[in-house]
Length: 249
Image 1: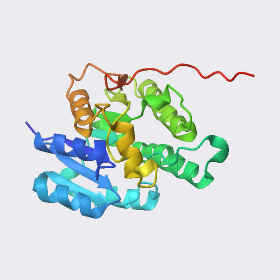
Image 2 (image 1 turned 30 degrees about the horizontal axis):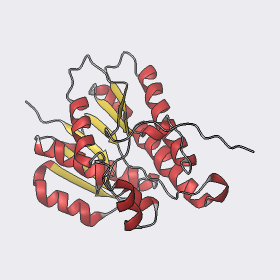
Image 3 (image 1 turned 90 degrees about the horizontal axis):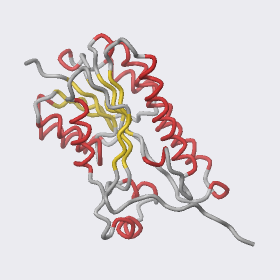
């Protein structure tokens, strides 16, 4: 059977790196995209000819289009797009947040995702492919300090559902994957590298791992062509729903 091709953004760490490895190990051709060239190089060395890497900032539309234009011939037919690149910045309440951080989250989690998806839709339709968008439980459940991050992930979830409507009849499948607490570099990025804060958050919680989500994405991508998982919410058993806040006089 001819090998299929998957493009994974944010492939230098966490869910993205684990997903790139999962597909490459199974013999797929993988296009791994991220900012950190050194980490992508490690993937290229590990998987050789099955792994094509592209180092660029997903927010840079010109760099994104150049990376797509530079794909080798045997990587041009993309069957699955995994929109994983994204980040949370800061933990402050909205009234104390840095506007620059808000804009960076919007540019990365929303604008870049939409730009790449738009660029690849023609060939995904031609190949009756699949789109997997990595959202978050914060798309559905707000929490203090989540403000714009949660808003961007709500966009990802709703955009996924909208794509399902518009792609009706094309054979293209679309899924929003919505993880809960996961131990990756997420909290380190969010807190500006505070390892103690990251350790405290995950200590004893048995959180989701990158491999857990990679396996979920692998399962979705390999379902029979007539099945679509619209949304899948994944949480560790140790995490459940919080109560409402009440302020009293």
